[in-house]
Length: 128
Image 1 (tube, rainbow, N blue to C red):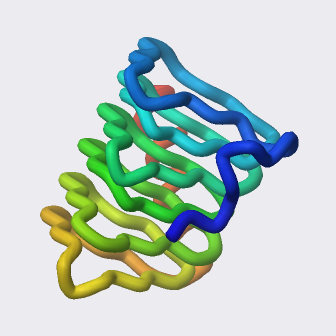
Image 2 (image 1 turned 180 degrees about the vertical axis):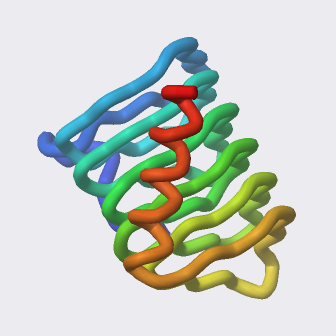
């Protein structure tokens, strides 16, 4: 079901049973099967595994959610909500794919311009 095998040397893995508190910035693909309490930013792809939990915002080029996210998701290209995934927060995506068994509570904004505008709004509100 996952696009990146856990043994891939180019992906960072936060394994099941691991809890990480703090923000993550990555240039490589990132797979989360444990719990992250903090914001995650990647210039590549973020995968939230079936048992993965994120309490914070996601910002990436591509995102594949199979677990739970409580926060806003900004995805410049394709955002996929798969299986039994549960997202509570606003979505900003270039393209969006939601499977029927996934749940999502929040607002959805689509298109490349929307993703950039969402990032700019977040940056300007942080300055004020």
